[in-house]
Image 1 (spheres, rainbow, N blue to C red):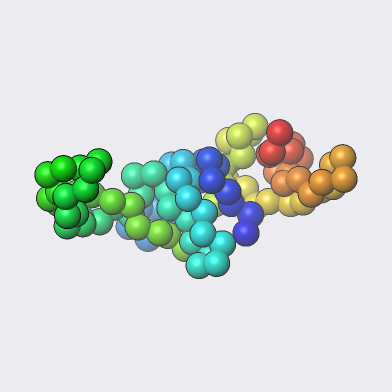
Image 2: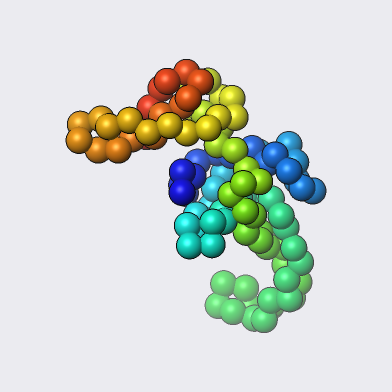
Length: 103
Ligand SMILES: [Zn+2]
């Protein structure tokens, strides 16, 4: 899984094609990610402490990781991720500009 929580991604297929958003959650086991404001579905929410009234809310549903591409924070292009060993750790790098994505 080369997309992580906090990354900014571009949706490349489906209804939300072209949308950009922040990854709220990465789910490697399901090969899916939850992207902010992408793949919204109406959900009937029962009352909880956070939402005492319940009702219908819009909630992000997971999208398959193949439907999104990581946006490079340096060159802001949609990229594929490469890996490089930096200081003994595996770091993600942009295949286009070669910059390390993780600091
Ligand atoms: Zn780049």
